[in-house]
Image (cartoon, rainbow, N blue to C red; front, side, top):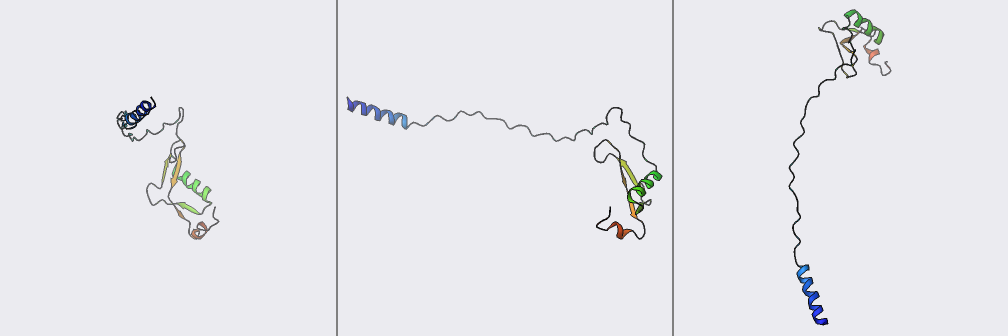
Length: 115
């Protein structure tokens, strides 16, 4: 009986040990569609927000003089010499001005300790 048992164990190991496992069942997935690149709509100003009218050239000159302490002046040669817009997206008007140094102040403007 032990011979039959050994033969049965050997046969089972040959039969079950030598069989190849079934291939894994995988489902083929479709690649996701590419992401659409869109330009977002600019944010609208808050309700009740009325932007101020653009500044007058005299107001721009006064502001430049106040901020730069008379070291530069508005360069009135290029037209326009200043632009108003929300350049940084904070829903507040910003001012970009073309300036030139007042005669003799260029070295002071380029100083490492200039304000």
